[in-house]
Length: 325
Image (cartoon, rainbow, N blue to C red; front, side, top):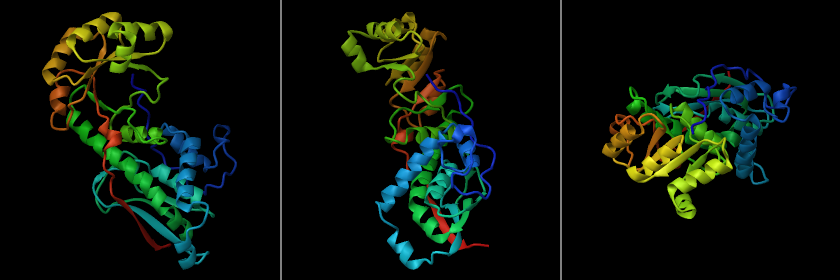
């Protein structure tokens, strides 16, 4: 089952603060990020503590226990500059507040942020997304880690928006899968939401998904469904089916959601008529942007697209340094 549509951050609010872990609200006591930034992350459906952890891992991976030798050697310690995160191509942006968190982890002093766009916005090549003013050394040390995440998430959001645009006017929504980068699932699924998609389950414990291997191990699709229902009666259950015969079995058994694996548009249309609203239907496999509308027009509720998170190219975003005003 899909998780609820979560809001994107709409308000700016980090202000001129740094990520020094100053007095925060009780909700964010475990988080060293600026409380206003933590609030924006939480409002977007992200865990500020998790985001801070990811930011720390990214920075420490780049430093490997040492220092940025090039930057330390070439930049005076007290030098200050402004870095403009700028789109090099058109797309949909996602992960700006996460990039701020990465910068905050690297910063040794206060930093000022100017936000030009918000996550989920369409942007054009050459458009400024975010400007950060702080010590030049810190900006250059954080540059690659912040861009890696921002480009990755924006690429996912851009790809998702292409699907959402094709499906506009139908009831079908594009939905992600668990084919995510280990450790980055919450961020990548957030990027899907920024692009106009909806999330499938976040974890194996959220909902059941009875797939072909479960069916083989349980001795049949109906048996597998019953086993999950008996063991976890309150958990939503999705069942993958390969044939209309299996579909009849599981819809009669009471499945909440049925995944139509590798069905053609014609077969999906038959499935919609057979189910007649008794369960939600999700098409999976064989899906492309070119045939997405044909599948949506059958009346299915979701199009499952694993490629959103496992194969989307990055959105090219750069960091341009200039003298601080």
